[in-house]
Amino acid sequence: NDNLAFAYENLGRYDEAEKAVQSALDRKLEMPDFLERRYRLAFHRGDEAGKAREVALGRGNSGAEDMLYDMQAFTAAYHGRLHEARTHAQRAVNLARETNHDERAALYQAGSALREAFLGYPAEARAAAATALHFSRNREVAYGVAFALAPGTSITLDVCCMAAVRLVTSDGG
Image (cartoon, rainbow, N blue to C red; front, side, top):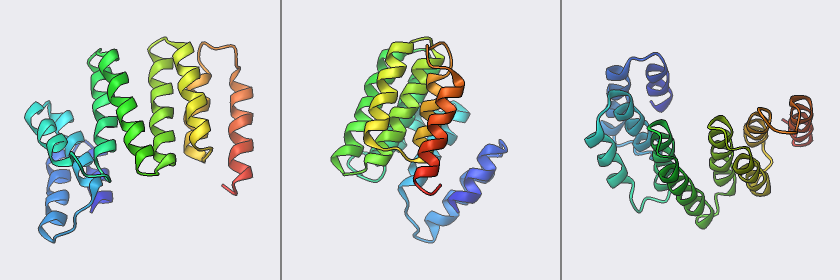
């Protein structure tokens, strides 16, 4: 049902997405992704109380808390609160690493690298990208890092893409 909710969300059909999540919950299907999905739906609706509710529900849930910190990082950046975004992002990375989810930590770092690059902080983007690749070199991390490093840096897009291709082909992807 999270796939269905995801599809509805991406179509802007937020009520239907919420119903898909609720249907799964009614059938006692609990997934950390549902907290993140409901947070995203609350974000789309401008529902501050809804976002806060999902964060509170995820507190202490090792499968959800880091995801929700990452979502809060994107929300803070969206609203121009970069310092807060960085704090939330680092907390997401730390929580993921504490629970031995290095690939998830790497994805959060790649997201931070993208955010820093798009907001005009290339040095911070490079640092976040390097940390992401230190944690994991999976395909999604490599793509995120390649995009983060491409704009406004001394590394050309060709070099980034070639690095991403090497990483993907070396892991069988």
